[in-house]
Length: 117
Image 1 (tube, rainbow, N blue to C red):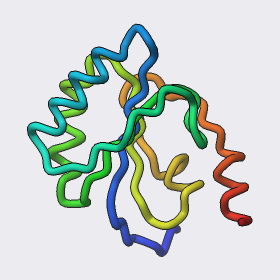
Image 2 (cartoon, one colour):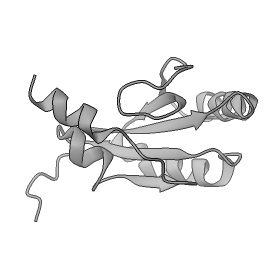
Image 3 (tube, rainbow, N blue to C red):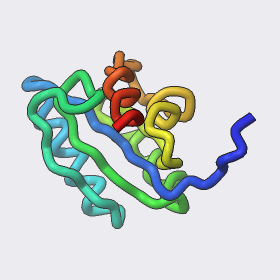
């Protein structure tokens, strides 16, 4: 059992490709208009453990219910990874995560390497 129950925030990673970039922009606009969240920059190429282009949305624990519910209903067919921030990047991106849409294969080895730095 995990004894760490401290979640300091959440990230939603919105994945897109050339064909779905406009949908990703609409989702981003909707999130920014409706919620007080931090919208990360557009990553047009895979970065870190992420296998596709994406942007990150950071939000606080008390926003989880509203933000994730909105994403469920407004994701426009995009694949989205939602994970907590507990200080354990590997577990947060694997065991502690949830997916909306297709579960993509992350480069978890990248996160393991970060732990050793």
